[in-house]
Figure 1 (spheres, rainbow, N blue to C red):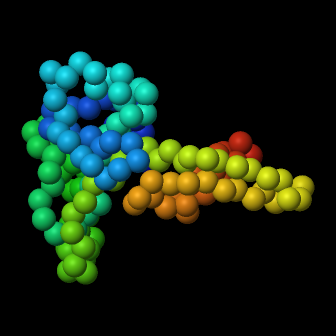
Figure 2: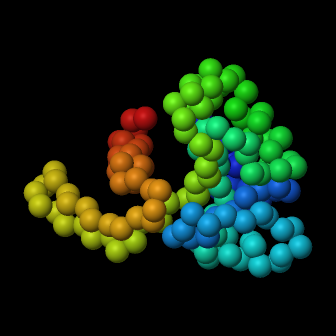
Length: 140
């Protein structure tokens, strides 16, 4: 189950790391910056989550404590990813396909075309589309 935090139902917390839309550029959340809420709503910036690997998370404070708690019980997986040589990175929690085109080639066949920002995967988009379709049929 996805937590409300990762589902985008809550805003940033102290120590969060935000990412600019369409880039891998991150910055620390500043509670004094009153434009953050509007920028999140306008899809200009996004909350981030860790892609596990070697190194320490760049989030701090409350966000660091929250992420650490979410990772409890996954130590073996974390160690395995580190041993594979992966470095810790961050990814935006929202994925916004651009230039979407849908062509119905047959009654049960669609051809989708879209652009994604660096670090995003078309398989993630397709998984979400399939989950919506399955949910509409009452399947999960």
